[in-house]
Amino acid sequence: ATPSHPALLYKAVWLIFFMLGLGTLLPWNFFMTATRYFTNRLDETQNMSLVTAENSKHFQPSATPTVPSPERNYLSALFNNVMTLCAMLPLLFFTCLNSFLHQRIPQSVRILGSLIAILLVFLITAVLVKVDLDAMPFFVITMIKIMLINCKQGWEQGSLFGLAGLLPTSYTAPIMSGQAWQASSPRCCWGKGTGLSESAFGYFITACGVIVLAIICYLGLNSTRYYQQLKLEGPGEQETKLDLISKGAYFIPVSCFLTFNVFDWLGRSLTAIFTWPGKDSHWLPSLVLARILFVPLLLLCNVQPRQYLAVVFEHDAWFIIFMAAFAFSNGYLASLCMCFGPKKVKPAEAETAGAIMAFFLSLGLALGAVFSFLFRSIV
Image 1 (cartoon, rainbow, N blue to C red):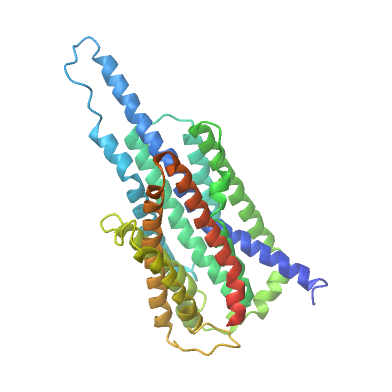
Image 2: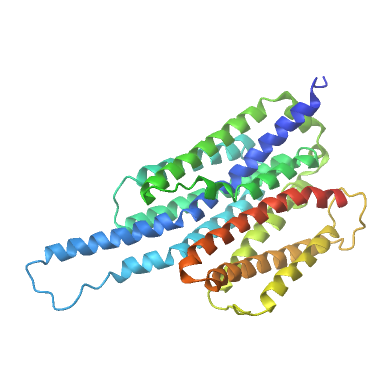
């Protein structure tokens, strides 16, 4: 039977996919945005250890000042690098693993199970805000949580795009839009005007609320008759098992999102050892503007369905090459701008400049999601 209100039901299913897309990358971005809490917690633990050591030696004369623990400083300094490594490797592995095991594990188990597991990790993270831990246990537990989140995120993201691949192509767009909009959400949820621990507690509880909302949306999706009808009418039913793995549902998460994440990370990491062009060089804004060339290059790839533009780069390898170059230049140039931007203003205004630049990074992601509809209509 045809739904009595197809337009309304279409919007409802579209919104559900948007929320599920929001929930795929939101947990990882919540952790990235809260790095100041984690590094500050390590530093506070170090200071408490030093005070305890000093009190235990109060009866001995101190000829030299207390030297901070190298291990504690080392953990705090390496936190961001280790966090990124602990995130990318499980994400890479489980996204690939999902391509092979998706037919053996039910879709509901992969998506719903991943969301519930991520919810439990965030509940534990919120509880640990109120628990005193030494630096090393806190560091190890945090990295384990990051690995678990990205393991489940790899399952969920691959499964979600696989789910969208069973439906008409218009239902992939809300997932991508949700993933873009999630970048600004963590910054908006971070509390201000209170202590760092209090802000972190409310922050992680907010993340739990968003994940619960994503779980409710997924449960509501499965109970929608309109969605069940779309699954029957979708193009995925005619695909063979091999095509679904190689070219269909898993082409986007592997060749697009996984490629982007890996090469974006490589570009960001390169700035730790190589920073060309310099702060005052005209090459930096020129290279940023030159990245506009990626727009026509990607539009001329073999994106289907299309009505207006001809396909110039027919082989899918071209898309992967362009995406890798696009992601690498994005990570490298964005990191240079974020590093050099606060140095272009007075020291007293550096923090404000960094906050403004972070806002415009999020704004750029949001505008990109909006303009994606225009570019898709051009194709």
